[in-house]
Image (cartoon, rainbow, N blue to C red; front, side, top):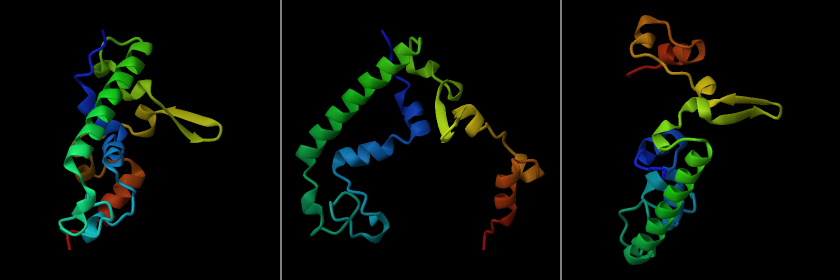
Amino acid sequence: PVHASALPSLSTKIKLHVAFMLSLGCIQALKCNTNKCPTGIATQNKELMHGLDPHDKTHRVYHFHRETVKAAAGIAGIMGYDSISGVSPKDIMRRVTSNEVVTLEEAFPLIEPGVFLEGNGPPKLQTMWEAASTQ
């Protein structure tokens, strides 16, 4: 059997949180930081919170999570792994252009701690680091 115990670490790699927000009912109104979320998910405004029914949403998120874990475990199994934790960035492909595909390992190389402080980061990121300001 394939174990999905490593799903949380995988979810951070593939931005699974967005799908969970959608399972809650998020409509991507992009008002999260305004306290005016029309679905009531990302607000403290009691008038807007009526759309967030915890009983209904609990079931929706539970079922979404259960099916996501099953699907992820199935995909890992098809890839030949006994566990989700075996899947790594070198195993996942990303289309960059219509005729170019790279692994996630190639698209997002590991950056060692301290390289930006030493001035040795990847050129584009190093430029952004140097342009950043604490002011």
